[in-house]
Length: 440
Image (cartoon, rainbow, N blue to C red; front, top):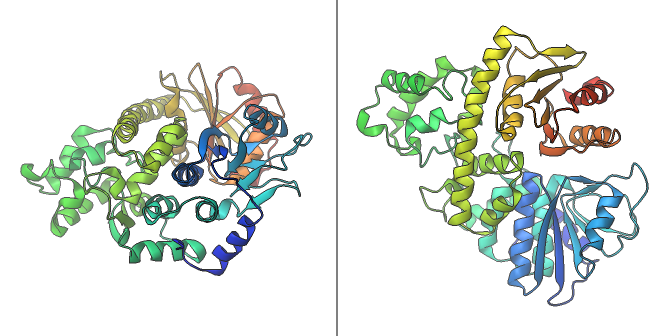
């Protein structure tokens, strides 16, 4: 029995899957993009393939691969059938030797002999249809599928994603409702939820314990409730917390504080997996810090060791980011960043380079850095951040850096890191040559 709904778009994906033949108990190499959405898709494929008796090896690559990287990946696992998930081939110099036996799910390969299923716009649905066709897809897999397609921007879902969300709601897997969107709203004490929020960053609140205590005093929240998660407060108490928070933060931040959310009814009420807002924050941290393997294990169903590892990593990340942002603001107030055309650059001598992408994202939202690009460097790494979060600009920037012999690692759709701070001057020259409207 089919798990997925019968819609025209899903039927088209099923037809595309007909071109692929996978023998019983095959060895499968699942090559997953580090992009957070691709990790959800990879988790669906890996779990369903294992359930069907296949041998599975998962490896992670950048969202964009050059011919030699595709050749090397396939050559190192020549006894495996390669399935590339969320990966686009970039043919700027040559083509791969032979990709005729490879499948690209939710990606793109400019090669007429290669099977491509879906596109990056419907990556998780494409992977789900592929799993339904060739492996064993079961109703519990809808949790991972739905987590990978939820959109908290307020945009009404449409097409295949709307159909899947409706199916999951009918199966009592997910429920849409308005709620706080801050990480930990259902399991952290109220003050910790505010103090450690970095997505969104609450200017004047995040990282400031005293400010959080003052906020809760103004909200007249009894001491007995300050260890209670936000979602467990009464409606009047929630409103008082919001009323105290609003004057302290930028009004543009409000839609990221509370609004449409998705509750996963099969998860524990005090688990971060209970709410889509938590899941998306953890997914973003995993990409930023280069932890896709841990995230994939959690999305595949590990709610013990790996989930705790990801949660602990995120909380350490929040603490380090909040501290680094305060240091950065202090530096900017004393010394403006070095500016060269559309690029601003500044040193940020923090010991943990993993915080640089988050710090850059936060600084770009402030009027102190009014440039298209911001480069942060800490002595060991160089981080490039920009405004426009898009596959197109990430590809443009990575290809431009490759062409200069540099080796960037993507950390989000609007940031990347190079493992050397000595490259920053060369990076500035590369960024200046990218068309001005690309990064805005």
